[in-house]
Length: 364
Image 1 (cartoon, rainbow, N blue to C red):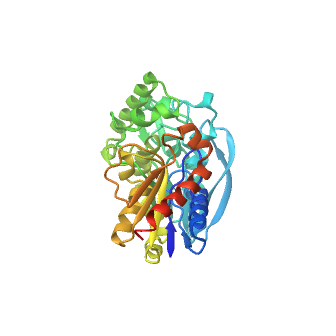
Image 2 (tube, rainbow, N blue to C red):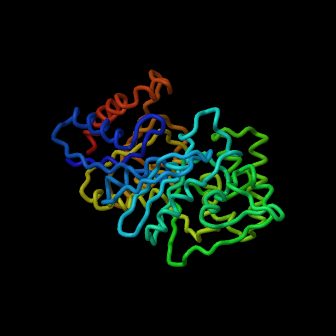
Image 3 (cartoon, rainbow, N blue to C red):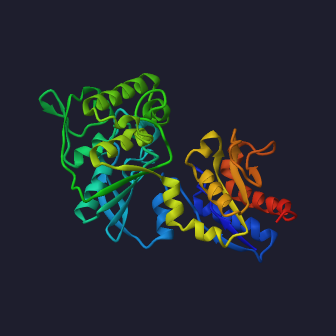
């Protein structure tokens, strides 16, 4: 028997690779002769580069860039055959800041722009920008300022613009990016740039913004869209990473792609499904968003096409009726609290995998 392991990370607890390790131990506790096929996945957010390295032959390109508060840090992106894979969280991510430092009025995607500029200068003709886990809400203006765009207030140019500067912008002086460079934005969200479902109102609170600051940030994003007047603010994914999606579309002519679909293709998931009798997948929380561009929905859909049954282990479950699976189990239950599940996720994952194999043995 062959079982394919294709989970996402359990955010704040385990990487996708560690989830695979725990699942494999539980399965082998049930039957050590079962062949395990590993395919850890991501949706384009944090951890994507590490997963790409397991599936592809890529080299790390190290350089010093500015963090979200414009302090120097060492970062990297991946490169292979003229293609760059950039994870914006490596330069502009929330995890780079302490709790007191988190305020998207003060943060910038400048460092992400430095990674992109380095990739262009090194001869990359395709740039895949993985967005997610951002500390920013600047609409991508920090990134664009590195690439030669200028943002003006009356006659003055704003140096190192941040989310706080967005309402003040009155003019954008454009810079022509070479036409032979293609940029893809990889993400798992479909939010527009602004409004009740936009970048600020949905995500800025998680980045440290107060309700008043969220309104200020949304106003700034609206102003940026008004000044540019290109209609891109309504494109699904424009609101990704604090509007970096919009910035990449507007300044780099980028296309928005599903991060999950991209990772599943690069990991050759379809070929691995053809060899499998059962698939295990999972993520930290299974909810209504899981069916919208997340790893679990992507795996379930492709497994269904391949006629392979799916078992899901998640940290907790909240309204995910649109997800079809042979079995769903959670780490959190009447004996295990959320706190316990987070601190003991590895052992609990191992235990749930074993328990599910015991239950599934009569149906496989």
